[in-house]
Image (tube, rainbow, N blue to C red; front, side):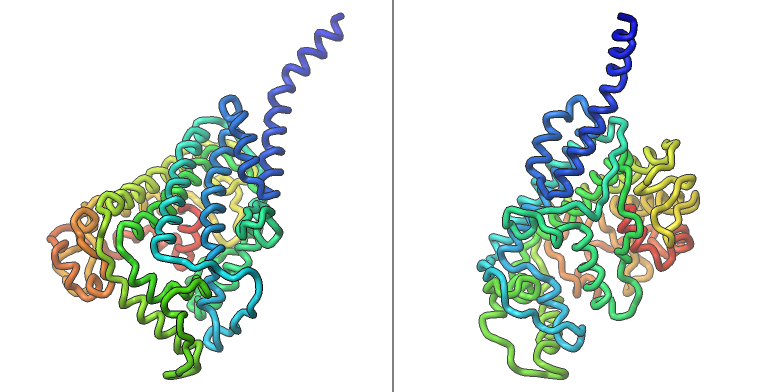
Length: 417
């Protein structure tokens, strides 16, 4: 009888660990198979009592939002590399015809897809914030995560994060033109133990993405759509594809047409503001991202282990040989967050090359600007209403970041968000 009692006690102690292991296994199996809806349902059933499941629920919500948007764009032939990196200028020939014909894309359809994407990201954020209150460590090989991008009902090997990063790195090399400024997307380590610090990090990335989309949706960019987006939606029936480009100016047909479209796209970035709340909301999301990054680091710096860290504390092991994380790295990043917040709040002004005695009030611009015209902002006319005296940001404002990150700043920014 005593042996039975001892055995029961041991099994009772083992049960929570077995449940957590089962949750992690279930999370990984659905992520690696690209079964996002099924994974979300499985995590929902456990999230109230299981911190790993709560984190998984937020992860599946993020990837579902990405998958749904990607499928919508894929139906219209979304393919930046096929549309942009063509001709001898980039060393890539035109893609051979094949696969399903793209559906016709309209400006209103694209806006609808982007609006739905923001809704999906906003649904994921509170789930990740709830997960950040628990203690967990879920091991995930990020390169094996899949999503059904083309909407054929199955997530193939070409639809994994690993395959996507490989393609993005190739395109980045083409478009970088030897400058060396493109982020290095190579990941020597793929398996990470994601914890509550990473829940804050992923919640922050939902705001990075949503802020970018909200900024665009706050404007009427239909002329820009007509002038240049056939470059990333080749074959979707946009205006500039209705007649084939056959003439040349400088080099050859494809490269000259690309140059002409690039000029047209810059020229048509003169977007009227049509949704003030969404524009101011983009600024609010940027501020939220800064705060979530601080919360992420606060959680990371309390960790005592050193096991497959995605973003390590200074006393933990970095997964990237060329991107060290020391005490000065963290301090420089946190200082950069503070400087960025001051700029967003209008306390620290942005410099304008034409007006050395005044600074540009970014907070006032979000609240009052009637249009976004990059050329007129740069040349000065559209900057005039937002110039005022005050402290102006300079290289000294970002001295710590420049000293620590140097030319690797974009790699650290992509990693830390």
